[in-house]
Image (cartoon, rainbow, N blue to C red; front, side, top):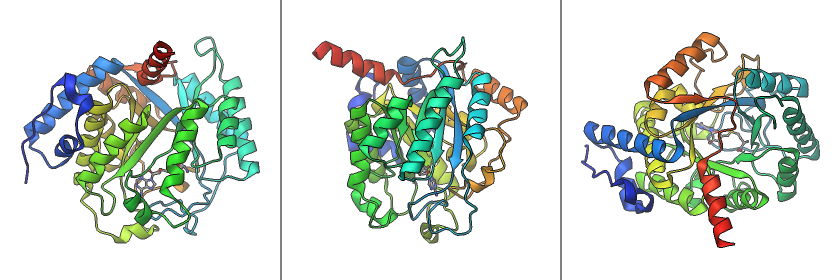
Length: 371
Ligand code: SAH
């Protein structure tokens, strides 16, 4: 059943209460969905401007020591061939993105905390920074890391090497749900502490949750949005949950893909209304669930698009969830068509710029004022 919601006024959206946020995330009437989308786009233009930025994702390894109950890369999944890209291949992909006007890349892998891995990645970050400098990007590509929970010292090493953003999904802000989605040795408190370390080290911090995963309610999701606000994060990725057959949670029945997709879009809009000046990414999972997932994400308040790396033999082995990539994203015609659809939404593509979230600059200005 659809309920009718009152879309709050622009001035007051950043102070929405969890109950009001929740009313945006429940099944709502078509007209209300359209109104929410318009409001979210308006807030995006107001706080972040017209530009949409692409992030090139380099999935450099699927080796993982974690055993998350929802993830296809979990350690216990023996059905996936494990790989690790060599430094030269990672650099080649980074240059490929830089040559095409991408301002930033995301280096993503499973979680490993051994010194060999940390040393390798630190060296890779330094090399990518050094080798992607150009007249258009004098400081090289912006680098976001997404390699899970690490010690504060190792986070510091990555930061000193030149990475300036870090994505670590909290997955859910509910400790109760977190416990049901993870084995005992992976703790909610430790994930949350990592977000705090990252901020204190100086990273721009991104997080996100899985939407429509087992046992999650609209109230849980509303609490997630309030959590993002409390943590004062800079970047958000709202990921629709997609069951993976090799993961134990796939046995639990969840809403249909269409319902999860719609809820993810509503959640993107809710985050935009409440957090306003953060970057919100359309993730690959949103693209996998429905055609035009990217464009829909943009029209509900996202301003960042995650773009798969150039065709690589390893693509098929980086399967967090059970969905095939729909497009050959390395094809120039595909990229051109996507950009023209973005322009038709009244937006433009930011090129040769890092595309940092305005929230970072606003926070820094506030800190200077209070100093
Ligand atoms: N190892 C890193 C990055 C790996 S990407 C880390 O731990 O942060 C992992 C992300 O993919 C997760 O944070 C989760 O949000 C997403 N993911 C994993 N399995 C998923 C699934 N079945 N459906 C949707 N998203 C999933």
